[in-house]
Length: 443
Image (tube, rainbow, N blue to C red; front, side):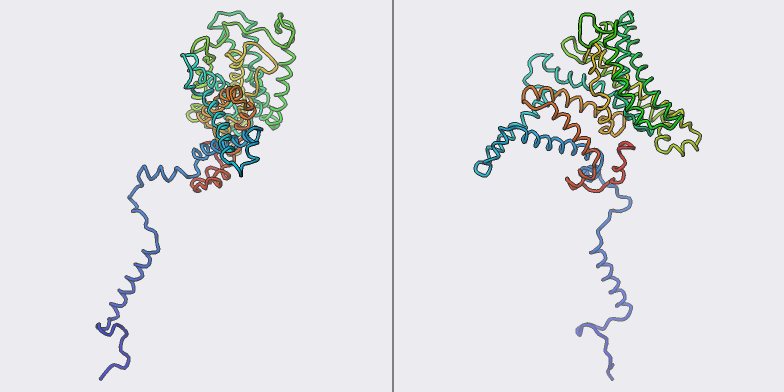
């Protein structure tokens, strides 16, 4: 008798039993899952160093974003050079007929401009002699030294939760007291320099203490106070220069007596090169601020107050005392930056523009350096190189020096907009959340 419902299966094979059919179905399911699911490394298998480097090379981390921001700024700067040059722009009127003319003229203009920027900031291959070879790096370090101090001033206040717009005014008070000590107090050479430097630090400290105590005691916003103090310092300098005993008796314009040679910072590479000992003081100040923030109790309190003043107060930290100390230390650093302007080789006397814009440039340096001490030092070095190279670029290529200011602004804009850089270069979203807060929290 035959089975009326024969089991399904191949007619040439024996019918499968129920356990065999279950095992077959399970095996088919596992194979399907393994085909659709990506393989993962074993839990104990660590990626190689090369794989980690490649994974992070094109990710949206702070180093990549900073580097690509420089590239974007230089590209935009190249476009500005082209559109501002009438001769090069004229070649684009017949670009469809002879495109090589437009491309060749554009490349010649941009390459020569950036080549002169490099030669004026780092090294000139055509230089002859020791002095000419070291002149570019000497100029870069000369411009870098005061920017390190003002950048550290702004960055230190940032880490304490304060926005120090007053680095310009603090640097102005520093340059005033340093110059007065430099030509009004007769002292021996070494002691005279020390007194002049300390006088500059004292001037900045006083000008930083005022907004600090107002913020701590009355809650007055430090941005408004420091902006107003900037104006007061500038007008005080303008008034002081023309007073008897301060103005140069041999001049009728607004310029003070020159600082005595005994109060000048010594030059490091001889009298023919302008780099002076201020760059050494800048490196020491960077190390001191890094130690203060990362190794000291005061630095921990400062960072705690900057992160959350209410929580810091609950933990027993004096927010009032911290605010005052932060602004005093920030003023000291900015005052040292100002003293570099008159005790170094930039100027030897007070003028209405002796401080230039080092206080406001310090804000850009602090932002570019991610408010980290050594990052600030590197950012100041970059800005110093742009300033030194911009002088040669203007002289040899006819490019306006204001373009350097545009480059600085573009760099900071792209640094402050990491999402834009990420979108342009299609960076991976690694560490994106951390990158959004890096301006306030550091690298």
